[in-house]
Image (tube, rainbow, N blue to C red; front, side, top):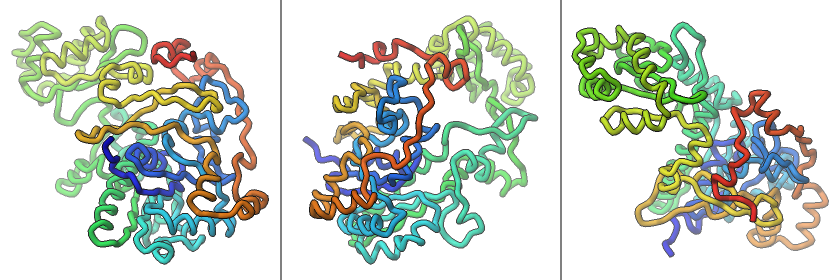
Length: 453
């Protein structure tokens, strides 16, 4: 069996929500031993908040914090250590763990690690070659925003994406669910890879200081450069493009079914006309150039929309792609999970949970990349809360039974939340009627091949 890229690397994951935890999950896929630390009074919000998603089979069970969809997706393959870092005794345990680890990842505001005496300078005293990843909204340093807490939604505003997202004449809009968090995830992975390479060559550790707003700026770099070079500010164009035409999201047969089409050249325009008809439309003087097509965009949208409305969205995509016209059906969650291309790429995998978890088989999103010589896979389900306290405290740190009991009695170690949130029961039909879900497919397990035995 091939050695996994991060085999032998121990990672402490003190991250919350998406960015750092998902980076840790991907590192676990690549062979790292990833220890996720949560506090008994401060669980990851993907475990124990309205942000945690629907529990498995919509059944919270007796341990709802272990059954939430978002947590189990993002934190696959990790170990769970529940440690109260708000108390000095808990931080002492963390210091011992840092001494025998390779990477430490966190996404607290900058003041937190300093107040705990665990900033990078202090960590180097514990382990000279430690690699520290700090993921914050605005980065460390002396800037006026440094201490601001942040989340992806507000970041879309301050890095400029919201300014150019939305319809003409309408308010600035949000681009997607926690969009910048996943940019930060990739940045953390790249940073750790570079730091490990540097450590291998020099024996030195590194501090990777990720400012999420800077990552967001890269997504609007052409607008920033346009202002720097020309003094022009970008505008909200909806589904249209500053240069390509026609471009839009067009209705297809069925309820709320759509396909995106984008024409980038005269050749693609001719190909589009050959598919949707009539072919001679390509020679119409009103549409002869990009500029003319932009000027008559409303008319083109109506023509394309009449053609797409009679066809299933996948057929629209496949017919246009076959002609060389960029097109993409708008997939919802069911489309993604059932799409044969995603499965063929290994992007979706089936993971089986231990019987005691009462979750059976589940489909987990894999990685957005493949390695030619090293097959990668999700190496196990996400952990139950505190499931590996003993493994870490006894097996890694070598603490005695008595020391472990003292930590448990003091509430430093735990295997349950201190004040668990009581979930509000809600049927899937109620979730749909309240707009929390678009629809519910009662046959999803059968479609995915994960029916209970």
